[in-house]
Image (cartoon, rainbow, N blue to C red; front, side):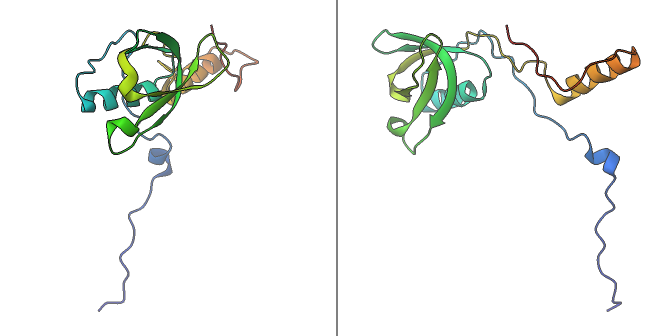
Length: 142
């Protein structure tokens, strides 16, 4: 043996600064098919990741619009539920997946176009234009 250790490849900090992001789906207005268990699970996973309101039509005809903030998934569909903040109520509601007849991604996606890369581009444009007084402030919601 030569006594040399396998050296780790050199890391370039400039390459580490920007990691690839995930593709952002434009779901606003989408009405997924809920014809089988896989489609139901996938649609409600996307509703959980969506940063806007959804409208749920329940099997009893009730319609509920609000923000999905949690979901509980079990090994069978009967053990799965979604938790929602209704748009015009202060209480949280838990709805079993099996009670949902229709799902619409009805509200605007608040995260659309707001990737890190888009933020850095806007920052650099403001800086290059000589603007002053801009910083890390949240954007106003409609």
